[in-house]
Image (cartoon, helix red, strand yellow):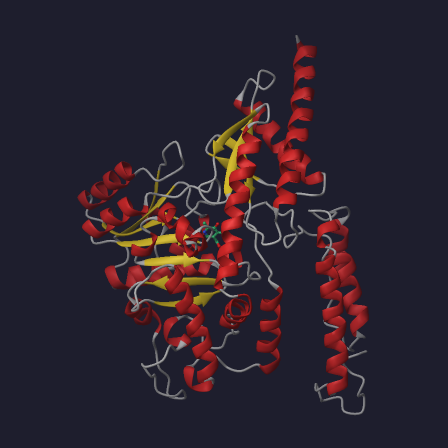
Length: 489
Ligand SMILES: Cc1ncc(COP(=O)(O)O)c(C=O)c1O
């Protein structure tokens, strides 16, 4: 099968229906076989000779086409396996992404039918489906009817658009005196987004956290007061609905009250934790989230979508429109009755991200998403209880949602440096066993190990393996450290 079988018409890029079908079937066959083998794949692929492989892949644009099989072979045999097995059931590193199969089908439909969903007039009914999907997010987050949103490529771009809304509404053209407040545990994408939005680093305040890694509201208030006294204009504060390092949930109600009193914009970064709000029983954990001025969500995390699916909700939809609405002589007039993506986001031409969410939710139903999200938390709570019992493990953070953090300590690890090195080693050893992939994080002076349960494929069996492998690797490390310290005496 090649894309240029029809050598008689070199200017044509069209394929015959039979060729398209055969190519599609081949891709589906390989992709499904890949998914079916995920549970037996190492949790992190081999990186042996990876530099050499990358160098060997460098090439200029080919002059002539090649058969599809010849292109798919290296992709599926060489490139894909040499990576973190992010869609695998043992992936509990970083914040796991998803990769629901129906979302891939949605992409296939969106890309083959290739309709233009940037402006309402070009595909009104398709845009309405995307508007529905955004409205479902709004409902689950209990934002009011006047809220509007947009699908983004991820949480980083959602945070960026939130800062734009706050800046435009509260600072107008006078940007330089504006100050923005985040906790020292906030995701680095916020500082990056601030810079993109014209808020320089020297106007971003990192507020220290308490023993549970939550923003210190007393220090937040003091920082705001100090900046006002210096003639600056505090305009925005960001709370975390689940930090990346330890899963901490900031006191969003208190932060929201401070923001309201100070006439500041309260943004909640719910990229990791926002979707736990879908589950009514878990909502008390996220109290204050639904009162925020804006909320970052990452459907590619908590809704298990493929990477490239982020979302932003803005309480007063007009604030989002004020940033993005524009017109051009060559385009139809803006209309106000229906949701219109280009009026609420920075893109004109773009993909059709809403179809991923729409198709998956319509196919599975909301109840299954709620059940899956709730199960991830139950697994994390159970796993943390087990890990806490392992000799030598000290817990740094029990799961608020589905993430917990811990470190190794003991008489054989007398210094912080030794504990940090041992904890790093623990993450690596567990990962090398091939069933579970874990990563840690530097949190101030301490390196913590982490388990984050958010892959829809992670079930009880993988959590049991995770606990077992942490226990065995911890014992090996402590035994090694014990004999090394005995030898030194
Ligand atoms: C709390 C938080 N905010 C923002 C982001 C950035 O999101 P993305 O990687 O989708 O851009 C992440 C990513 O892990 C995150 O955990």
